Image (cartoon, rainbow over all chains, first blue to last red; front, side, top):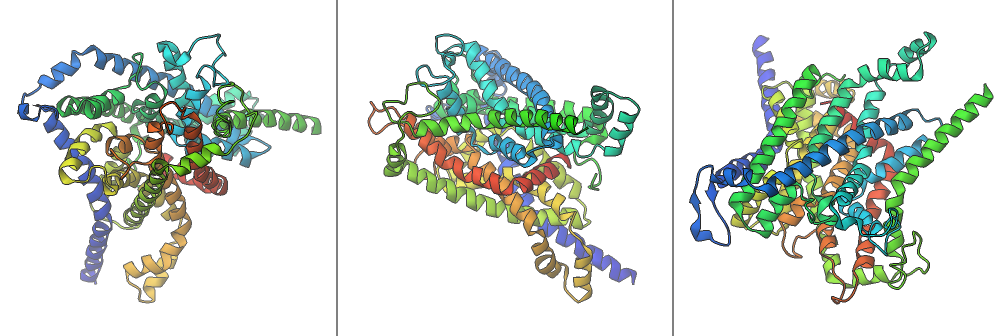
Length: 297
Length: 277
């Protein structure tokens, strides 16, 4: 009997591996190998315009990038965009989640409308914002007097952030709404009978229950915001020092055909993201995704 | 009491309106631009004074947009199909079977979901150039599958966990193997989840810009979001604004249709997949 059981167990394992193998294989082939290759390229001088000068130069590329002011400007821009947009989105997203979750009228309409920015192609949304702020064409262009907002650095950055926030707040709100759904209604009622104000109910009852959902939403959005590319490409093409690190890596690679420097930037971006993820996972503690055994909630 | 509920309803209604306006204005704006005539395009008004369909006619006249549209649809459909099939297999194993390495797979796919895609762009560019995949459909489909798989696996395993598995047991009792139980009993029950996941994955592929702009160089594989950013008028003196907006509307309509029809499912798919790791 026990022999039969372990036979079953073996068959189950085999089927498990078999079913997962294709997905795992694709993911590893398309990510792991290129990452290794990227690290290898980052240690070389390799410019497609001068392929004969390819040679191994150790960490020289890293020194070049890390002492380059364009890199640090782009890094600062990316950090600024990440911090500002995620902070604003958290507040707006929480409000939106509360509306979607608790509104007495038109819940379906609100949820559908809120999903539209999420579904819209980022490039399309970016064009919409670009034309909105283009002098002569746009309905917003003269909002702050004359001038072309997308040709000045501060206003360009503000518009990039506005476009990001518009597009991704709904995503944040959806994740937060899933957390809101976990708040027990009885608990809210009890708090309310005990004389808790709406604000107290929010901070003392809802927020603690929602903590895992909030952290997940923050993590996903932070990493996503750090990769900002489409919006900047369409809105300013990186002009007036509004390039993000992704733009800079793209420019070096595709425009400059400098694989060595482009790969170095890729590796540096990867390291930064890894640090951000690590900090978040430390904050998560046991609430980290995948840390439990897959039991539902 | 009745008075307070009416007032509460009014207050919520007002908030609803703010949300809807906030969400729709940029969309309506680009649609409005696409219907403006060249003469009124730069009048700065929100609504068109004169309506025209010329912008739509012009984009379907040029090869540039039609080719990009075909590429976009083909690439997104194939990537969605493959990602959902592979994702479903893995998600079934994760939610139902016990085997070593399960946690590793879940962890790795989470890592990939959070991965900075731009870090892959430079090595993929070089590798695809050497393999001859650069500027081809498979050259885009592969990265799309990779980045859609974590989403598919998470969403689908969440769905699979809600399926009544006693049915599977009953099927096996009747002599079906585990594989047959999966195909005949569970797959039909899982269809709504598969469908939702397919929509989410399709939106993801349809939306991508970074891979499409780095891994393509001609009309062979260039997708619409990239084609949009390269749009020029028929002559260099023509302003492409109207054409860009018309093309933007064309690629937005399918997504809005999906969202309208499947709002409830999309919400449940996103939240079950993302919050629950």
